[in-house]
Length: 186
Image (tube, rainbow, N blue to C red; front, side, top):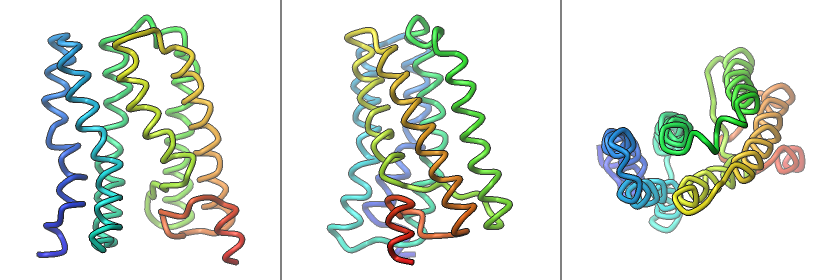
């Protein structure tokens, strides 16, 4: 039980725990409160990994938990943008549909090739997690249509890389930074 109750795991789980608060703030259009809360909750995606490394508490359970809570948090981020800033998102509807198709395809390929759906934490996908948090925060201050479009393009590259990893190498460490690092380890 001690390995489950760790600071990194609690930080990861907090993204799921505070999701209803973020939904409430978005639905009631409390944009300033939402932005502050979203940035605080979103920052746990950075701090859970940092804490795991610094406290030497990296576990398979922690990696899985992080991936599991990332899915509803980042899918909800698309909802939050649409709910609070539809004018920034509507022009990107075809790109968003393509994003969800590639996202689903990456899970399908991993499920078929590895026997289970896997969410990688490659460098491209990690960078995008931070860009999403920053993009949602910036949306409070300015039009971020261009930034969201750039994030989507980076996601296309990240999910394509993830699919290629599964097709070529099968199941690998989900924290592998890139297909090039996997290939170099041989």
